[in-house]
Structures are given as C-alpha cells and as structure tokens.
Image (cartoon, rainbow, N blue to C red; front, side, top):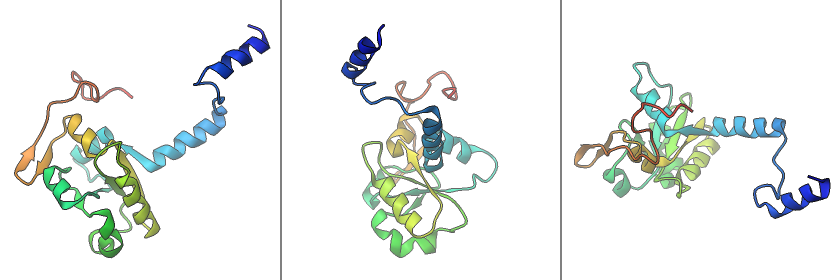
Length: 164
C-alpha cells in the first residue's frame, strides 16, 4: 500500500483517525490507570484470602441503595457525608476502594475524589456493585445474604478467573 493510500485508509478508519499513542506513552497511561482502579474480581479475591486485604471497601451510595445490596464488610459512607464523617470511619494509613452502582455511574469517582482531597489513598472499583453481583459474588441486603448466578457476559462460568 502506498503512503497516500495508507493515509487515506487511516483517515477513513474511525479507530485509527487519531493515531495510537507511542508505546512509552501507553505504558505510562495504563500503569497510571492501574494505580487508580481495581477490578471487581481482584477486590473479591483479596477479600476472600486468609490474610488482611490491606484496604477497606467503601460504598458511596444512598442508604436505600446500600439496603438493596452491598459488598460484605464494606463501609457505608454516602459521598455527600464524606467530608463530615470520613475521619470517624476511615484510617488514612489504609487505602480505600470506592464503589457505586456500576460503570454508568460516576459516584465512586466523586467519592474517590472527595477522599483524595482529604488525604486518603484511594482506588475506584471498576464495575461497581452491578458487576460485583453480575460476577456472582455474594452480597448482603437488608434481608440478609444474597447471591446471583454468574453472568456469562461478565465472568467466566466454568473457571475461577478469566486469565487476564
């Protein structure tokens, strides 16, 4: 393919219209992303391990949402109350993993920002409570423990992990 033909094909390709970042820039970006985010499966595995996970999980949703279902052992602290109550509930020496409803909600991001501004080390749990439940992890409701079947579109059905 000639250079002009290659440029035309790239200009018409919505994926390559903006060229990919250099490998060094991509490594910096993706490395930083992992410093800010935690995967639902990784959080569940760390919580299920025999050792102390080294972090606390914070549900930043309303009381009504918390009652519908939340990660076992999570701390309930709605985002609007973080500035007022974080110091009573959290230790600044222990990283916090925030979550909200799911990937369509930025409540966990707002909670993480509020905590970071107060001096906490924080990560956001990607997928939120939605993916916690969809991946088949047990959760607690106002009525007691609950668990859904794994959703084959979000979690490996015949394996403990996806291999990534």
